[in-house]
Image (cartoon, rainbow, N blue to C red):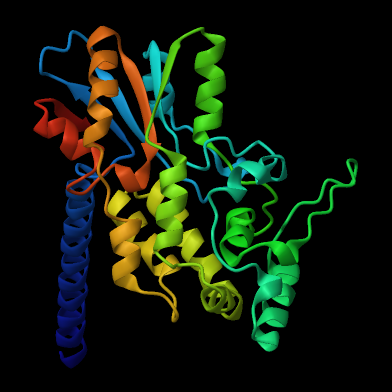
Length: 315
């Protein structure tokens, strides 16, 4: 009798445990489904007198060339668009050799070159870190050997941010592929924004001082893990806010100001894009590609278009 009673209660416990597990699983699935309704890298633009929908796509710059993947829904939107609007983000021409553009960047980049840093110990650590962790390409065929010590810490980061991705030797660019595709179709292409201003804002944020670069090298594996987490937030979750939060963690080290970083990098204003965007989307279906940082928030393009009277729906 004792064993029968014990068996009864054991079975009852198992059933209760199973029901709890099912309940939790359903709750998680429902929460995930609810969350997914609000997160997407692709949004449909309609309403406000538009005869056909246009599409707003958020790309990301901290990806390798091998990681640039257009999902099926994005391919569909591209195929159904007759025009292209690209944000002039500094990564959109990532396939170009940065060393061919050094003269152009020299007028935009300020700061103390590494070889002029007074602290000899710090200077040596930075050069060692660059040699150990950063992938600053040298074109052996052209015998181009640019003196890395003449870089500012920001330049060293800018020319090799793909090094935070394990096994990567060149940064990827959604914009570059999109520009090629729409150019082959002889489609109308327009640019919005200024990569010069983006570079200036990144420098004004102070995220890449000499000490901050040392912080990156001191915790390089942690920084790589954050970049991997960004990729997950982008591709798997399609969560621009989570992506933005991880990017802030990546930029905000022991020797930076979080407030300055938020002010100069994460405070966006897309209002002045409307004079370019509205005529395009009123004429034909347009594919708009911007960096994910400019998608959300008060100054993001979703909010700007909504305030202008358009309906935006995540796809």
